Structure formats: structure tokens, C-alpha cells
Length: 314
Length: 175
Image (cartoon, rainbow over all chains, first blue to last red; front, side, top):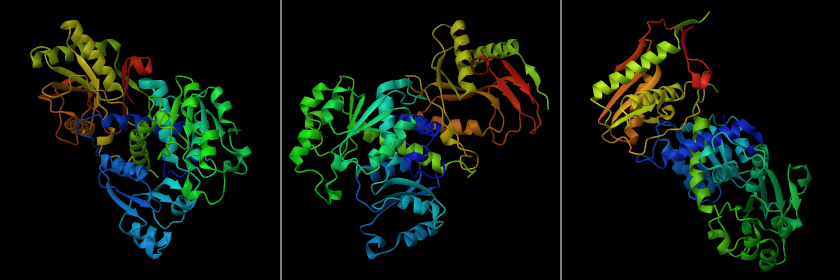
């Protein structure tokens, strides 16, 4: 693997390999010395043009556990706020000798531009670009599902036959896109449930089912239900009348939670709007994997950084 | 080039039995003994030695696996390696006699990685090294304490260790 830009690029074997490596990385977290020397002497730059807590911290922790040197740059407080272009920023990073760039950008496709432009000869990892993709989030979601379903025997397994329902703002969600490609590659079936205004144009081309009715989807008994965040920062039009109405029609409330099969997982990529897309009871129930997802995020990002940065035959 | 078989099933079993006795002798019994195999075939050999130890002195032979991929010094030279699981027995390594088990001892670099890996996990009292085949050509000041067979080789030759559990046959061959 040279870059990780999109889960669409991953074959089933590559995806399973990342999950398996993450399995070994997770073991490190239980040891006394939570550090591996694998990336000693490598420089990883976290280039965040958009606000983020968990993804940035997670990538930083991952790189540090692998002994890489980490430089974190956020748009605020850097020359980017003075109007520096992506090209100039990239060339600056190349000049200081970055081996990998983890980039989050509000424009879809920015990581691919960085990877293919020739401005910098570093591995590029997409940490979320606009409304396009967020591959490491999808990988950690798949890892969390696999771990809950197969337990200690997860290694080498895919998600064959698992039914995943993803609910909410699909239109603006890079998490939903990355999950759609990755989960179907791994053999799961994916259903999107959302108001018609929050489903993208051309969704018929995607390898997913769609529905407008959450109650129907819940009665179908999915193995996993993933609630997406309502992204108020990207809501530039009236996609639904009021928050209360959205919550009533498409929120996971206590009554809907009780109708889900007992073994179903409740997932959320965070940060959660409690009371809007997910009730506090659903978020804190034992079926909820929200905190596991954060913990697994570090292991997945260690695996991705290890795989893009090791290996000399590029 | 055709492969030349140098050890068959009976030879391998005899070598492992002798190594087991030597381990018990040098440790004066089986107390605080932990066998750590280096994946893939070292783990299988460690399990076999543990089974033999158990038949000599019941209750001995704690066995685990130690993956050294992340500690290698050639990570950015060769192709990407996928790590294998590390399993440390419940009692940990502190104060134990650890016997590292690998199939072939060559440059010694794998063992150096293993020593670094152990360092991050605990502080054993003693670390020893058992290997089925020692083919020479060391690049580091490392030697084995227990050797199944010394095989003088040239660097252009390859040693193939095949074991029942992974390859369906017990055999060591030079190609």
C-alpha cells in the first residue's frame, strides 16, 4: 500500500490484511511498554485543515506508539490562515522531509491531489476529505464489528452475510461513503435509511439498498445499526423541517432501541448529538460500541501507518 | 537446483528430544521455564518441545509466541511484512528463564529483534536460544545455546524447514 485515499481502492484481501495487522497493534495497548520501534526515524505530518478531536488525537497516538516523529499542523495558527496554497504547504512539508502526510481537508479530493501532484514524495493518508471519504473511520467500524461478532477468532475473517443499516445524513457523510464501499467489499449488505433530501443524487449506482422508513429497517432486524451525525456545519439548506421532526422520524430513541434484536450493535462515528439522532440510553447501552470505536481507531491507524511506511519496494 | 534432504521426521524428533533434555539440564529442572517460539515455524517447534518437556517432567513447558516483525532492522528495505500474533503466557516473563525457539539461525538479526521485543514485555532472569538448524554466517555476536543440527552452508544456498503442521511433512532440505 502506497497511499490510503479511498476504501474503493481496497481489495478484500487488502482490507482483511489491514484489520489483521490492527489486531496485533491492539495487543500492544495491553502491554507495559505501549510502544513499537517499527517507524523509528520516520516523520509523520498531521495536516488538518478542518477541526477534529478524535481523528487527530488518534492518528497522533498511533504514530507515536510506532515511534515515528509527529508534527501536527492545523489550518488555524499556521500559514494556511494567511492564504498559503496546498501546493506551497506540501512543498514545505517535502522540504522538512515528511515521510507520510495525514490530511483532513474540507474539499473532496484534496488528498488525491496531494498524492498525485508530485509536490511531495510522501505516503498520503486520507483522514476525511469534504463529503467524499473517511477510510480509516470505515476500517475501524469494520474492525469493531468483526471483533464484536467473531471475538478472539477474528483474524482472517471478513463480514460475510452481516446486515448493516446506516441511518441519517448520508448526503454529507464521508463516513457513510467509505463504509458503503468497504463493508460491501468485505461481504456485508448495506442499507441506507434517510429522508429523501439527505440521500445523494445517483445513489442507485452504489452497491447499497435505500429506504426512507427507519421503523421498517429496524423490524428487518439488522446486525448493526449505525447512526450518522447530523452535520449542522454542512446544512446550508432546509433538508428537514425541524430537529424534533427529524428525531421523531429518523432518530434512534428508546422505543426503537427496544425493538432491535438483542444482539444488534449500535454504532456512531461521533461526535454524537444526544437527543437528536441517538437517545442517551441508546448511546450508553451495552450494545453501543461508541467508545470501542475510538479505542480501535488507534489500532487501525497504527496498522495503516505501518503498512504505508514500511516496505522499501515502492 | 534440486533440493537435498538433510533431516527427516525421525532426525527432527530426535533433535528436539535432545534439546528438551538439554534445556532441563541447564535449567536444573522445569521451574520458571517459558518457551517462546518465533512465528511461524518457531512457534510449532516451541509447542513440540513443550510437549516433550511435559512428558519428561509433567507440568513443565509453558509456551508462547513472540512476533518480532515490528523490531526488525530491515522494515524499510524489504517488502511489507504482516505481523503474526504475540502470545505471552499468563505469568509474564519477569524473573523467568525464557528459551527462544526458531527454526533456522542465520544472520542473527531475527534474534536481535527478539531480544528487543522481550525487553519491551518484561525482564526475564535468563534468555536462551534453541534452534533446529544453525547454518552459520552470523552478522551479529549471537550464538545458540541448544542446536538441533549444525549445517555448514554457502550463502547462495537456501534452507527449507518444512513441518507437519504447516507443510504436511517433517523435513529439512538444502536447495
